[in-house]
Image (cartoon, rainbow, N blue to C red):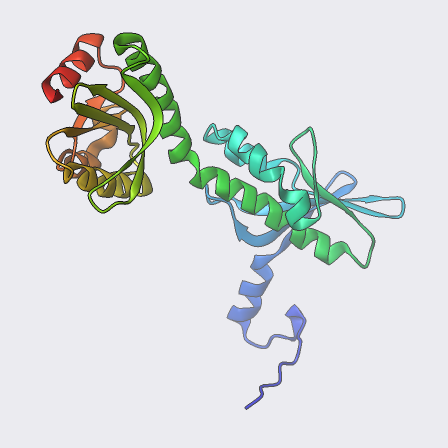
Length: 257
C-alpha cells in the first residue's frame, strides 16, 4: 500500500502541540546584517547547532561561525576537531577556514542545501572530536610512560606502541612492553570512559590467559578519577597511577619478572 503525504506549512498544521513542536525545531534571529538559524541537531554538550547566514553579492555565506570548534575547545579537543573538519570539504562540499569556521557559499536556490551541509559538517566534526577524546587522553598517558620506562630500563628492553597476541590470537595494542629475561610486562593507559574501560578489560583478560610470564599493567591518571571503573580493571590487571615514582615502576617490573 502506498501512502500519500501532503506537504504542509507550519500554519497549516491543525494540531496545536504538533505546530508548536515543529516551530521550535527551527528558530531564526538577526545578528547585524546576518541571520542566525538553529537546526534540529545537538552538539555533544547539549547546545543546539546553528548557522549564520550572511547575504553577499550573488548569494549567501552560510557558516557555523566556529561553534563546532568552540565545542571541541571546551574539552581541549581542538586538534582532533581540526583533523575531522579538514575532511569536511571532501565529505560535505564545504570549506574549513583558518578561523576554524565551516562555511559554504550558496545561491538562493542552494541555500537550504548549504544550511544542511554546514550544520551536518560542524556537528559531525564536533561529535567525532568528542568521541575520540578518551583515545587522545590514553595516548598522551602512554607516550609519557613509554619514555619513562625507556629511560629507566634502556631501549633494548623496552618497546613502544606494540601489539601482542592474546590467548585468543587477537592482536592487542599496548603503550609499552618491558622484557626482562623470559618475562614481559605490558603497560597500557586506561581512562574513565566506558569505551576505554570495556576495551581494556577484554584486552587484559585475554593477555592474562597467556600465563604468568606475561604481566598486564593498567596505567590510570588517578585512582580517584577512575572511581567506579577501578574495581573492574583491577580484576584483570595490576593498576598504577601515571605519576608514580621511579621506585614504584621498578618494583612493578621486578616483581613481575
